[in-house]
Structures are given as structure tokens and as C-alpha cells.
Length: 346
Image 1: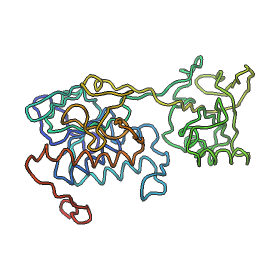
Image 2: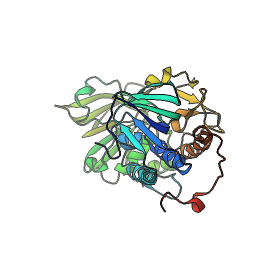
Image 3: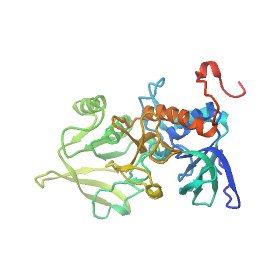
């Protein structure tokens, strides 16, 4: 059983103050913010372990914009957030998606795929982009190479040590992994259909610098055209430019980073105001269009929204303070900084 998880039982309805749907970084921080306001949380996620996309897609990917951490790997960030939430004893119900959300006697009834039912005063949706999977390039026979020499995510950077790696894409994932793998791979070739990359300017500049130094090969403007290999093992990737000219690149591995295909799943039927697969919220409180439901992190939308983890952290605090009167009606909330209030038992 995953640490902190509770066995599912459909025999009874359990109670909590706040049901948090999504155990990614923002959902974990919402446990802390709610706990500081004396609200008990139950956390649900379809994935079998906390961390969301950070843990499932890029646990070793460095993150550079977390305050106080010049650099921190995604997996370590998740560990730190779980440690921060631990004093408030959240209940984790992982490995089963939430399939039902409806009005209940004391707020909402939340039920997951395993039949576990919870009554909650309020609900925080921190589901990131919803259910996700990779956008696969349209290459004939690519299925035979997947999870053998074609990978849509990097779980362990060291798996690519000494390998000839082709990375396709022009966004942050492609550029960040090109920079990271250039340190350990035999050769890294980056394929992009245009000369300009959509990554952070500093990262794109570093990529260009490594290319000028001969430490990375840039194949631009090219696109993936075909794969060569046998029994799931690549031997080469064939590229083509817009004029149809081809280029043969010897390769052991291909990493196509063309983003994620997302699906809101049952969430789309919960009567919320959805804007391009995101939940429209009040930026002052992160309240959704249904009273008692809040959305934070990448799933939340409002004018000026920045899809950053640190924005989600701030939204978790806003939502927790807006939820407090629902959980503790009539009780005045005297805001205190954590430096003066401290933590439970400390």
C-alpha cells in the first residue's frame, strides 16, 4: 500500500473537512494550508503515488523556479511537500480516480472508482491537466519501439548514459532534457521543425551555446520521418525537411516531446464552468462556479493566470482561507503567520 493511503471500503461514508482531488505538488501544499487552518483533508488521485506529473513524468527533471531552491528535482520537491503536509495527518486514497461528485448532507459526497465514499464540507480540485498521455508522432511501426528505445518521458536520467539520443520537440521538456542528457549521453541530437525554440530563453540560449561548442547536434528545420531498427531496438532515426530531403541519424533512443493529450474525464460532467479544459475560478478565492468547489494549479483559469507551480501554491492558500468559514461557520479567522503560529505539537 502506498505510504499514507487508507484501504477503500464501500460499506460506509467517511468524513473529512476538505476533499482534495489531485495529489500533485499543489494538492499536497493545499493539505498544509488547510491544516494550518484546522481543516482535515482526504486526498484522492488516480495515480498510485503522490506527486502528479512531477512524479509520473519527470521525477529527475530539475526545477529552477521554486523559491528557496535554486535547483530541485521534481521527485525531491514532492518528498519535501509530503513531509510538510505530514503533521496534519492527511488521508491518501490513491490509485483510483474520483468518479462521482454530488451534493451531500454536509456539503459534498465524493466517491472514487474503488467505491470509497467521503462526505466533505468543501472540495479542492488540484487535478493538473486531468488525465494525461503523450502525443505520439505519426511514425509507421513506432509501437514496436515504445518503452524499449522510444520513450515519452525520462524516469531515470542515467538510463541514457553513453547512448546516442535523438530528442524531438521545441518546448521546455525537449530543451531541458537535451541540456541534462548532454552531460552523460554519447551524443544528443535535437530535432525541431523551426530554428526558434519555445523553451525558456535562458535554456534556449544554453542549447544554442552547446550546439556551437559541438556538444549537441541541432537538426533544424527537420521533422521525424521514419525509424530504423529491429526487435524494438532503434538503430537510426530518419529526418526530413519541408522540401522532402532526408537525413539519417544513428540513434539508440528517441525521445519525442510533443506535449500531453489531456482528458478531464468525469470532472467535465460536474457542472463547472469549463474554459478550454480548465476550470474558470474567481482569482480572489479560487472558487469555481459551484458553491463549495475550488480549483487550484494548472486546472484553474482566470485572466492573467500563470501556469507555474508557485502560482498554484498561492492559490492553495487563497482557497484554504475561503473554505474556512464553510468548515468552521461563525468562527472568526484570525490570520497568523506560520512563524508565530507554528505547527501542531511543536
